[in-house]
Image (cartoon, rainbow, N blue to C red):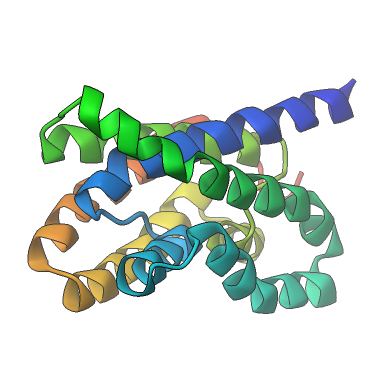
Length: 197
């Protein structure tokens, strides 16, 4: 029963995350933090598929997880693959979305952050994640006992600063709103989550 719930959680969380990225961030060249943010930076600059970049960049962290916390490795591998596939699969749909809905960039950054936060948060509650920095945050949370959402927020802030320097100040400011929303919502979703349990 738990495995079935976990499968549904990975699928639903990945879809919510992919919707947040493709429909609310990409139209305004906004960023999330972590591996998704790095994947989006590569997408904006080189036109490559963000999901494939996320998988590629996550390899070193998965190697660390394999060496030190294999439970996290196994629990996050599916989340990484499904969420990365969902991001690339839904990517072409954002063009039709833009023509139907023209949201202000600030509203889009908030809604994108909320959806990504919910998707990330519900996956973390079932001991899975999208891998990448979410996986790194789980490993650090186990060591420091800090809430995973707070750790993710700190890592995300660093990625946003890098993206702001490379892309634009507007991208950095709006993306800051996004990661604040992601951090708050993820923290709310994982508030009672015990790192060691």
